Structures are given as structure tokens and as C-alpha cells.
Length: 561
Image 1: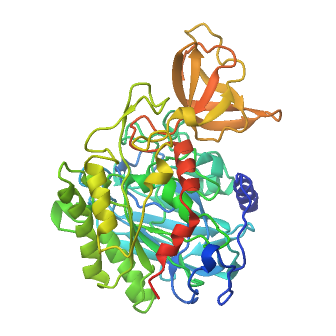
Image 2: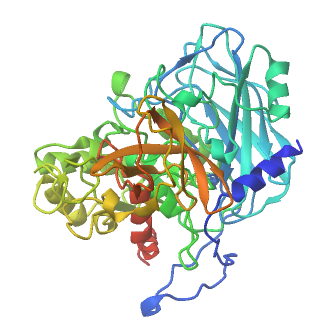
Image 3: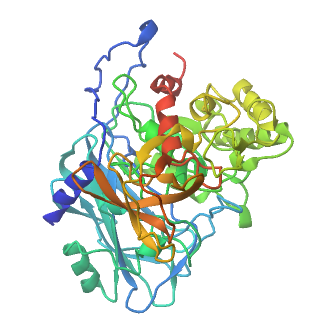
């Protein structure tokens, strides 16, 4: 398909920073960093399947129902490849989904029939397409509730390092049956979601690179999270993507919750599809420490106490069984990861610090029981929650309860226990990068992110006619949650979900929240540091935190010599 290379080139053009990576061929000696230290040698194993894609998402959240005329569906999703050449890809698709919230990560969000895959194609950045086959066949059925099918594709030549590639998945089901998905399409990255009443029709939509089917990517729900009736629809696709070619760098198995998966939704994803602090930070191609491709195990709402445990209503072992198949069937007994990165535990909050911390530690004990007492584990401290008297505009407007106070409350005691625990070989403290400088008990507020002024005013100022577009400085990142002084002393917020550059230093941004707000000329403009729940950082808070965590913390990924 000739349009694939163009679409990938357009995605690549979204990047705002220069890739300053260096050659990391096996045996290549990197420059030393301060105090004469450098990373441990990388010992390559090019035949070991390792995580090979940014952006991958476990299915879950909710089921959807096949509607008449829309029961053949196709997703086209784009991923970033590792910082080394890859060639042979192993791509599992599953028939089960994971709860988000509640008893997460229980694996009981299931379709009522098998996921019937018609075909899958690997979309190369040069425009070529390669069929992903399941035991030599183009089609496969992932059994409902428990099943996994394994797709494979071998490229005729190595995929270049840090490439952008796509996976197009076509599947179908009987009208009235339910199905699962995991991907909220990222429009600015060229991702699409089509649906039709038969296979030839949905193939034709994909071949033409047609706009997404409105029912599958409605404007009103874009970049929103909710349930089946009020959320951006979820497209089916690969659960994980592995490939051969590994150059020996550390590979994290990430125990996680929404602070990895749902700090962002779709519109703010970077050029490689990354969202959230840790996905972005791990993917930074630092000239000394490099980037590393994570194997994300957690989902929004996940609790340490419910991960890798139980049976029945709390079963949370199917994902672990999947990665163990990679280990035992495809890797000759070698894990598709080298160490464990434990970001989990926030949703296990408890008024008693020891109880809270022990939920987190219990998961590490279970991981070590499964994979060996010598498993190298890096811990991460937990971030606080706030309330605000001014919608997150000022640091002074934040309040923090005893439970969440990182300086004197329960959270401090929990983080001290994390730092002291012998379960961890090392601990990364995220708080210095996340908290505000003015008050280290409170997080980043909008006042820390001045963005200039609204250009003119949106709408017609009658206070009745709604508007959905506003002109801003072109430097404002897509996906930002912004705040502006719409009238003297009065502030409101919007989320930026679309962008058209005007070529004069300004851009017209589409906003998700559509109201008739009257806006004064040249209103002061700020970027939010936190989302409205004051649990999850917004884009500007995320980028600030990523830049504040030293890349040298990646030194903790290596076992002691």
C-alpha cells in the first residue's frame, strides 16, 4: 500500500526533538559519564524474543457489541521499534480482557464468542506490507476468556532501529455478539479504525486509507475515557509485540497501574505513541544510557494485592502465562525481560502504612517465587493525590491530606518503607522530579507552565453560541489541558484534541469541551500540570517530570557486578 510510507513519514514529522542516540553495536564501548562510570557491557542475544514496540495495550475496560453493517472491523495502529535492528516478529493476540478499576487487574472482561481474526499485516515504513501468519494461516480464532493465538512474520531485511511501523488487524463477529479492544486510536499519528458489513468492504476502506468510520471514532468521544456508552471506542489489536535482534540492553518487566497507562489518553501521545511519565522516560534515547523497551504488565486501576494472584473473580495470571510461553516455547527458557520495574502500589492505599506497603511487597514476593529469588527488582516511590481550591491553577491552591502527604503523612511512611526494603536492589524516587519547587508537599500547578496568550478570542462573544476551536501560539503541544483567564479574574479549562497550523506562529486547536464561554482578547494562557482528578499529571506535568528524572537512574537496571 503506497500510502503507508507517507503516513509513517507524517508521524515521524511529529517529533519535536532530535534523536541523539549513538551506535550501540554489541561490544561497542560508550563514553563514560561523571565520576568515570558507564553502563555494564551489553551481551547481545539476537535470537531471543524481546519486547519490540512502544504503544502496545492489553485489551480490557469494557466489551462492545457488533452492530449490523459494522461487524467486520479493522484497526491500523502504529508503533515505535527498539534502538536496534529487528527482523523476526512474534505477535500474540488474545481472547480475554483485563478489568480497569475495581478488581483490576482481574482478567474477566471477556467477549461472549471467540475473537475471529481474518488477517493481520505488518506495515513497513518503506510502504511494504507483510502478512502476519498464525501457524502458516492468515486467519485465527483467539478463544474467548482464555485463549492466545501467535502471529509471526519474518521481514526480508532488518527493520531499522527506532523505526515506526504499523499493524493492521481485521476481525469480525456475529451481529449482537460482543468483542474486546485495547486501543484508543491516536488520530494525529495516522491511526485508523474502520468497520463495515463484510470483509471486502472493510479491506477496501483500509486500502484507500479512508477516514475512520464515524461510529468507530466519533468526534464527541475522542480522547475520552469512560464506559461503553461514553468513551472513545476500543479497537482490537496485538496484546504485545516481540522481536529478535536484542543487543543486550536491560529490558524491564513493568508492574504498573494508571500512572503508566492512563496519564494520557490519545491526543497527546508522542511521535512513537508513548504516553505517561515512565513510557516516555524509558524511551528517551540517552547517549550514554540508551532507551529500553518495556514489557508493561499492569493496567489502569491495578492493585498490587490482586496482581498475579488467586482464581475465580480475582484471577490475574493469564498475562503471566502468555509471557511464560514466550520464555519456554520461543526463548528456550529465557525470559523476554531482564529485570522488574515496580511502579505499582498506588491503588493499594491504606491508612496503615505497613498494610499499604506490604501489599506492594507481596507482589514482589510472588514475582520472585515465580522467577527466582535473585530476580533484579527496581522499586519506584509513590506519588500523592491533591485537592484544589482553584482548579489546579496555583501551587498554594492545592491541599494534601494526611494519607497522601509525602513529607509528613502516611505516604511518606510508605515511601520510606519502599526505600528501605531489601526486596529492591534499587529504588528510584520520582518525587523530586514531580513535586513543585515552591512546596515539595504539592504537585505542579498551571502557574508553572505559562504558554502566552489566547490569540484574539474564540466564538462570537454572545455567551450563547458554542465554539469548538480556538487560536493559540503554535508552540502549545497537541493534547495539552490548558487554562485561560476568560474574563478578568475568572479561569476555565479546555483539552486540545486537534490542530491545524496557520503558518504564522499560531495554530487553530480543536477543543474537546464545547461551551459558549465568552473570552476576552489575548487571555492569559497556562498549561495544566494535573488532570481534573488531581491524581494523574496532565501533559505539562508529565513532560516536566520526565525531564526531571535523571537518565542516569537507568544505571539501577543493572545487577551488581
